[in-house]
Length: 616
Ligand code: G6P
Image 1: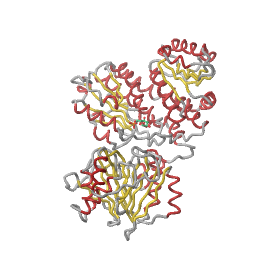
Image 2: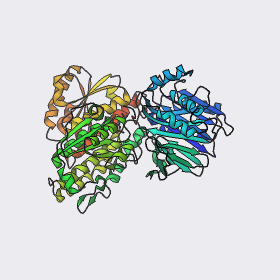
Image 3: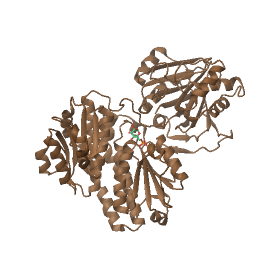
Image 4: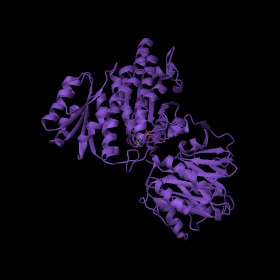
């Protein structure tokens, strides 16, 4: 949700800033801008509504010259996505430029105060108060010290921010700070870099430094980085980590879009996740940092997540309750945060599931759970993310960078990670023997090949996608874990094809959604060979009787479904019912992608959405 980049060094800043923004574009893409300062102190900026590609064209003709600069790609919160609301924003004198990710909650009071003091504003954004506050500080108590001026300004802010600041009076100096919004910095031989996440930095370094909330970092052209904490003490050893993937992993390779690439990467993601996880004593999950006794004492788990990760939570609930016999609640983070009546036991464990590790609602919920005395464990894809750093333990799914806004490979990898946790718990609390755990693990090892088989059947999804042409609405059905697959499939379709998709447990359909069905209405029914198969088949009959066109996800050899339904997306037989959600969803991911492409949409950057939602 907004991407921030910054550079100071020996090279021209604009080329890397533009490349960095391109890489960060999945965080927001309704407008973009860069601002550079030349060694002689001239500020030069370009910004516009639209994508980074448009900014590149503008920058090519404007040719901003300077070896220190900042850049921004925006997901609008305050003010429409227009040229004038695009970042960077300047102070009244035009000397200070700021990029910001987050929300300034008290911007109206600050703006009124600044206007009363004679400041004038050029945008509708909350951000614009920040350069004005820095200007006040630089002209007053922080004279001659840009970092201190940024600290003084940040002290006035309420809300969340990751800031990059340059000033014409300090060419070659880039100041960054954060509170609640992610920001990492890196030093190299060519200079120093800052970015919202590691994605753009992977092309220049494999080692990054993390800023804590309220840290202020001063980046200089010689590559040095000085960090001071909230009390203005130097931070001698900031926390740091190595990027564990190659920069090429964040490139499209031979694929036409990131979503296709990431759907196709699922088998390898699962292989990486499972590698080395089965040890002599069961599932190796040292990340949990809980002893066997502590694990055995857990009597309730609350899973907190948003979006696709919430759907992982629903499947995880089934696995944990089935295998470890521990009751599980699954909560939307945004709802949980305002549920004042939530009850925990003395041994409740909180599990947060978050691909990015930066979703603001999920982070707030995790902090609240810690405040309630619970251990917090995170399943995440991003090394060093806030969720991982703040949790008592974190399991990295190692799926590699996920860039398409619609989550695919993180869904299945997080699901399998939650299965590992379920087995670990089941062994610790005696609900499963080591032999049973081993048997399940060996079944998980079949998943990559099962996934490859489904991927090879993508022609079925392409063919079925034609059924959605010219439609405005659709219904997704399934029972038990397949209901969750239906929810996730409907979410995928909504996200990228803008086609309304309602998802319901099949049996509940007759209590409302059935009224939607008329001749030609598309219904997707997830009906694998399981104990509720025949129940769902009856629901399919009810849809067909009302003229629906049914696209079924069914298990190889299911003659009954083949005869009834207009399209079938076939999945191979699975050794365990809980493997089915991880393979049937792949058909629905591909179906959504084909429908969106048929309609001519950008599947990687759907309108209004952002990959990492860092505001509440
Ligand atoms: C956004 C993304 C979704 C994602 C959700 C939760 O809405 O567009 O794809 O599922 O955030 O993200 P998280 O990083 O916490 O899993």
